Structure formats: structure tokens, C-alpha cells
View 1 (cartoon, rainbow, N blue to C red):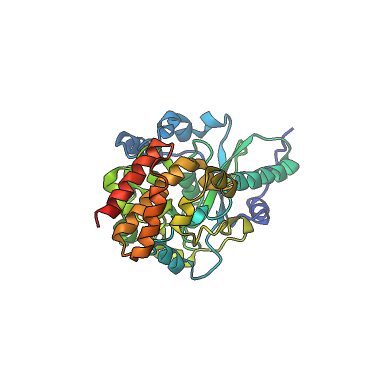
View 2 (cartoon, rainbow, N blue to C red):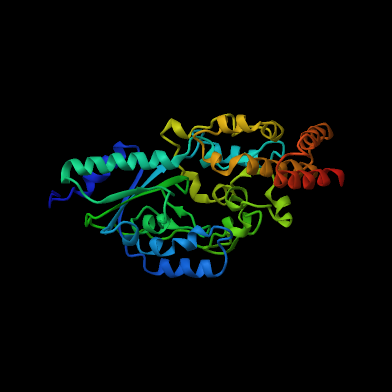
Length: 361
């Protein structure tokens, strides 16, 4: 039987921090204006091929339809920024080196989805130990949940103009998790916004994907193009992708608040397989089995080998206009030619585009 005495908020936060979470807050499940904002965004076609956002819209907008009886959300954050205090400069150096592949900093280590959910489960177990059985479900980018809006309501930060959550104490380099519960917990208070007149995230975006403050067109977003898009990357956007082969961090790297980004405290998020410094030619040389073994347990595994090759082919093609020395361009061309008859039509088409870029010099 469920106990009528709920855990104190401070006790819940203490348990969460003992489990490695560096941000904590509680929100009620009334999503208000955010639901209409999401409907308008979908109606504008800004979601691209992410039809799952439309298919599960009602569950996303009405949490009790996803978890019957849910009335509160325990929201948590966990930092993933690299340990090196100079990580922003090093990330820019990686972006500016056309011979290296750029992987979004969040994906350099292990996949965060299961890690966050497992720790939320352990938090639920501790709550059960005090109140008895109760209704709950843990999420981390794993179901139709408006994590950013709920985290905003829970006081973990404000939504920046790039649409990501921002916190004065840790910038935006953290993962969010949610624990829906049928416990009527006291809600925290949202924090004030602190973007002011700054528009750096808007102006730095290589493809102009942030079409207005707080409005992202996923169809132009490099993270969408390299991760979510299943077909061919539109030719008009390929040259703008540069060497970004999985995701893009430009809007975060330029953000002044990330001067206070907190380094990851968990070793799980440390770079694996040299992805923070890997050369494109080497990445393009991986066999399917090498990709599977190297990316096991990584968020990158979700796009699959075919789309990995698609992305790297585009980046190799962009070396043609990036001032790469002739001998290194020859290596890129040789690597591309070796896959010109790849079994995948998608890969072949992007390889052919990349070779045309080099031949046009």
C-alpha cells in the first residue's frame, strides 16, 4: 500500500545527486502554451521526416495519456561536457580542420539513453522503499515526452533561442531525464530567461536552421540531416555541412553561457575510439563489422553503417573547397573511389557527388 507521507523535496534531490544527477527539479504536467506551440511547429512542416512527433502528439501533450494517473514529473539533468576546460576551443579547432570528422560532443562516449533511464529507475526504487509501490515511468528521449518544457517548468533552466535548455550554472551541455509519477509532489518555480539581445546561436548556424528566435527548422538543421534524415541529404545543403558527420554543436559552442558548462563526472561520456580527433579517411575506411563493434553502446549506432558512410562521403567531398593540401585530397579521392560501387545506392550517390566536387577543382 502506498504511504501517505511523501518524501521531502530535499530528500529526493539528495537521492538524485547521489545517483550522479547534477540538476533536479519537479514539475506538474500541465503543458499549457507549449502544446499549441508544438502543434503550430508541426503544422509549419518544421519537423521534416520526424513523423513520430505527429503520430504521438496527444500523448506528448497530455502526459496522463502516456502514463495513466501521472500528475508530476521529477526532472533531472546530467552533464556531459568534456573534461578539458579548453574544450570549446578544441571543438572549434575540430570543426575548422576539414581532414577530421566532427562528432557532436554528446555522442563521443557511451549512449546516454539507457544510462539515464537506469539511474532514474534506481531513484524510483529508493522512493518505493519509502512510500511503497507507486505509479511511475522513466524516460530519456525514449517516448513522447516534452522534456525541455518540463525541465523549464521544474526550474532547471530556460529555453534558449536555439530551443535548447540553458542553465546559468552549466550552459546547455547536459542530458535530461524525466520520471513521470502519480505522486502529487510540490512543483518548483521556473527561472527567468537570460538570453537578452544575444543572437549568436542564430547567426552562427551554418545552414540557417534557426529561422527566428526560438524557432528551429529541422529540415535545415545539420543534426537532423546527419542523424534523423533517412534519404539523401539535399544537395544545396551538403557543402554547408562541412566536416560534421554526426550532429552539430555550433549553436552551443558560440553560446556565452557554455563558458560555465560543467565537465562530465561519469567516465561513460569520455571520448571512445578517438572520435574527437579521427580523420575522415580513416572513418570512411571502416567496414560494416568495424562500425558495429566500434559504435556498440554509442548513440551513433542508431543511424547505421549506410548513413554513416553517407555523412562521411559528404565531408570528404567538402575537402575539395577547404584548402586541403593536394596530397591529402588525393587520399580523399582514393577513399571515395574505393566506394564508388558500394552496394548502397544512397552511398554511391553521395560518393559520386563528392568526387564531382574534387574533379571540379
